[in-house]
Length: 260
Image (cartoon, rainbow, N blue to C red; front, side):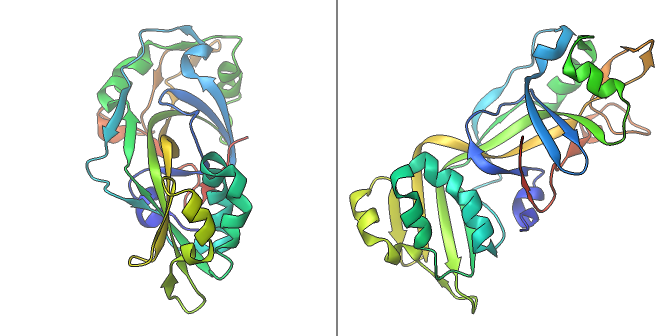
């Protein structure tokens, strides 16, 4: 599956199942090539914890009217979409997925997009004031000094409460899968809508579900008897400490990020 035509290009990693339990300043421990573990709030692993930077919540994503995946094989897309269905219409999940039986590929569109974010300048100011607890998972993880280990902080999440699916048959022609589940649509008019004109089926939820995130690697400037001087978010090599030097990462390029 390739999501880089839009979501990856904007700097977001696409999470494998839409969720509600992620926020900026959540710590992720990554082991190459594809082991990602959410371990909790960053402050939980600090000996010295300054005031956290402000999280700006529910901002309208000015440059994102609709976020979309690329076309993907139906079985892969429905595996992802199953997480949405179980949140929105769990009793009809299997029947709705069956409505896509004639699709060779599907594309998912995320509408009514909002973001929760921390301004980069706040990140740059905050991290050098932080010091890890010696007894923390983070301390031991970074102390290994392994090239396969990477500690990541979420700086932004992107979320939606309206998800549309466009279906394509094996000749590449799109069709509205809603015609296959008319009774389910009829009894759930506030949640499910079939759009025959635009050839898509739309699901609405009362809450915004997180479908993507931005994250950056955190580094320690140096170790002295296993004591860090300070954290920083910058790439290796020459840098001037500006926003453009922040070491942002796509967690799983062209794939869904699956967390332990």
